[in-house]
Image (cartoon, rainbow, N blue to C red; front, side, top):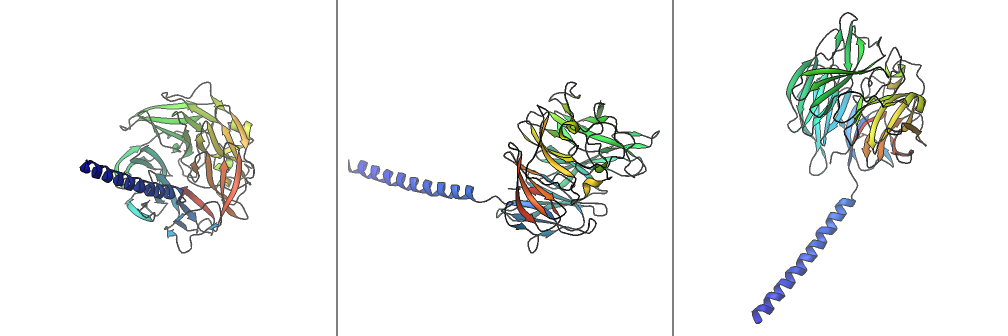
Length: 407
């Protein structure tokens, strides 16, 4: 009996200690969960369009105070494209800088270099093949040349392979393909593109049809072209998201055909087509005439969830390439209901300028975006369900090229 009483006493003490440790661990976990999220931002310092400098740094707050790279930013060389995948941020050189540098967060949440690789010509396009593989494409601007697709191992930050693709060309018309997205789905690679003149001036004499080149993946054997004449070319130069996917893997392709977005001719309304999951043609019964519904042409679009997307809409289409000046206030923001084909303008959002890349961060029905006007630059948080915007932190620079959560 004495042994049993001692055993019971020991077990009771062990249980009490276990409960106390559990309470402490639970308290620590709760405290850790309540700590603010560290965001990583790609920041462009104030300066002329050709002389501005890019930086990368962390911030715990996007919605109050100000954002500045002074004293904390990791300076980047030259003008950069930014692309994020699988908690890895790629800073990719442009024109005469052929270095791609990958960054991640260390165990203390500090930005650290993960690796780098070198490419031959500018990588103008990025996309996700799978969690561990990114795609990037060299797109020569002049003459009839290969579009070189790179497979990039994100873990080792190295090029695993290259494939030369022509996508589309017509020597008779002196036209070549400019791709606007790289979408992998169901063993296929979808590459939407528009036609530009081979002399390299980015003129677009044919804008009456939407085009997608389809390849097998990972074999990269060309299979067919997907076309539709209900709208014009898919995507916009420098934004690499001509198609967006919803939760059900339906692909939505958008057309801008806007002078402000670089299209020298316009022949069809700005709109959206859909390729249903498991299919390889545009759905005959789906066309969303966004230009009619929203009162302007799409500059950029981002899928949020539950059939909703947010889109920058061009309100003044009188200036060629007008969308690419951060302070040129020609864009409004709308919420697009892709199923019901409706548009709702976002309240409390000023007219604003444009950007390159894909600089919006989506989290739990909210969209965080860099908004630059002729007077200032701020982060805005957009509540998609209610189509309202809230002004956040002031950007003490030109703009943010991206907002990321690398945790």
